[in-house]
Amino acid sequence: MENNLFRGELSDGILNSSHLELLFLSNNLISGNIPEWMGNFSSLGYLRLADNSLEGSIPLSFSRLQQLKLLYLSGNNLRQIPPGVYLPSLTYLHLADNELDGPLPSFISRLSSLVSLDVRHNKLSGRIPSWISSVTDLRTLLLKGNSLESPIPAELCQLKNITILDLSFNNLSEKIPLCLCSMPFGKKRPLPIDGAFSSYVFRWSMPSIVAYEYVGLFGLFEFATAPIVRSSYSETVPFLTKTRNWLPW
Image (tube, rainbow, N blue to C red; front, side, top):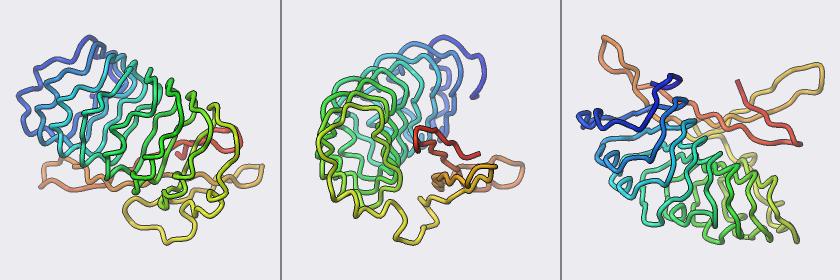
């Protein structure tokens, strides 16, 4: 139901869908808080509510969503995430373009399966926490457009799987850790099938420009008259290079 004109608060009419696995409602006119009853969807794996006018915080009831892999809440007016939220299966977390303030939410440190974290264009402040090294599977870390302060922690160098790191438009200063020079950024290991970055070369009159698209095999379902067919979901990560934003298409 994405890209429509649904407005007002989320209705509890979909509560009858006890086996719901995917809910996509991005780019509508939905407002109010994310309701607590959404935590009752025990089978929910993929939730997209981006580009609405949702307020408040992520409800604590989300901790019951033990199967949730994708949480896409960018482009809303969310202000906080309770530290008690725990989502053990979460792989892709998008919280860009909200009103989050204060330190980087500490609940992220417990997301052991997290691969992609996007909190760009919020009001986050303080230092990049040392616990960031505990999220060892991170491939993309996008912190652009906040008010994060110096210094850049050396713990970032422990993220050996990182491929895209965006720290632009913050208040960072002091020395850049030398260990960043030894990070492979995806270039020194074979690209895996799942969780790989594939390169795309755009040919213009100017020299070729290389961008990267994050390919994550979500295992979404295509519904047809025949038995359900499992397909892949391609996650695109736009990122900043030399002050230009590039989005593969």
